[in-house]
Image (tube, rainbow, N blue to C red; front, side, top):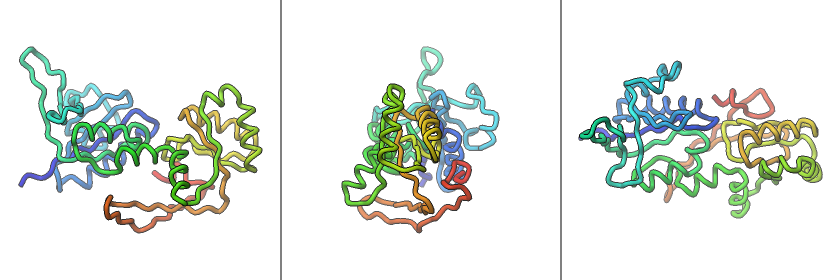
Length: 266
């Protein structure tokens, strides 16, 4: 039997682009030799490309999107087409080349990858994929909605204040007053729909709070503020499966700083 053909999607047009490349390379390295791997790289500009060069990390040290060895690729919701390379072939008689994909492995961090959007596209295309479905992805990417769901199921979560960028831009003082009325310093400021610790900062006073909210609002249109827990412990746990989920061994990442930074993680 021919080995399964797995499309590994990585990159994307968000602030976690670089770490998504690293994750994609790790998954490709593990799968290669076991399966036929089709790399699908999304540039920062949103172009979708494939080609054997994308199987190697060296390609991204001086990446050239115009490299003739790279080919444009699309995933279409037409279930009869699935994955197409060269969707706009040259010449009157040119035809798109079809690549059958058995399963897609999304390794995109953050928006357009962990938020249910690519999962929805794959659902429409009837292409199996790895990871959480549309609803779980769209809820989990949003820290505020995640709190709502967890609290609704009886799990304890930290209280928070959240607001939109437009509210902050229109009335900074009102939001600062809301935070100070509810929490003592220090507090932690987070973009609501980003990962990898990007834009996550501890504020020890009003000046730091204003500055950190302004920074977070450049990353996301939705921001939340929580009380900062001293001597906290971070635990990671993966879960495999749906009907009969199996948890992994728990992992405790260590950091010298007060919170786990992007550099600590990657």
